[in-house]
Image (cartoon, rainbow, N blue to C red; front, side, top):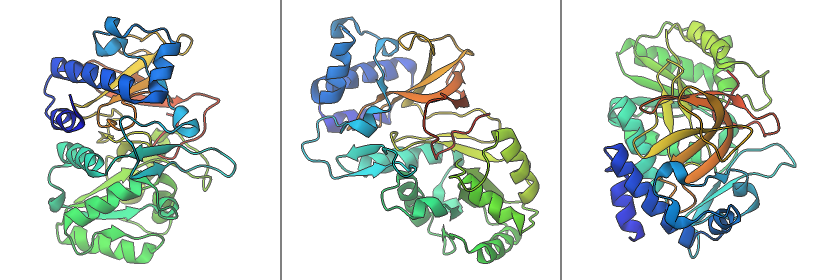
Length: 329
């Protein structure tokens, strides 16, 4: 099966069986066309013929995105997204053949949760990310801003007074607003402005970036709820190494799209998967990662539940602090 056929099928998944069939096909494709993944699977002495379910597929440790060029079937990459990192730290690079697949993935993920992007005015407070031109988050939000078509949609950086005025004005008009922000920027914003919002959604993407003390998500959401006078704060789970996102609408549970699955591994035996509800390392199958690797063992700790939802409960002690919503709960 070729790349275009895979892409068509990724966004048509409608059952666990169709997910399994496509995941197995992409696994074999990436084993044959991804040198890094091929070598990793061989080191594990995995017999490809014995991999007959996605639960048996090996997961590539996420740190390989820092030390290797992880690509599948790409002769020459069109570009890459890079993770944020502190000085002296290696950053992850996620190479891509083109951006069409990423755009399809984040657009469809967004629409599944929030409906048509044209219904919203999208405002963004992502100052630390805008300092870079290779952020996948900035690319996604920029594209959603453009597709919203609303004249007030845009990045507001540190223009807090202007942004506060827009929020009050739009809310008074009954306009649906989605304010997407990194955690520290949202906290900075509400320190000097008070709101009573009726038509806005606040979506935090995590990350203090050393600007504020780290806090558990419950505390963060409580402060944001009080500052914006709304009952629920939404969250996005995403990272440079993924082309798909999962969203939480305030319950603390993230819901992945049909082409993405979360599995939990034993922290002491990374080749063993745990039953639903048990805490362990988060493994992710993201079939939109067709041009890199769809099967990733992250450094996040979490719990997965029947039918798809999952929680993020922390990170491994020896892992870097990541910027996209990976706070300790």
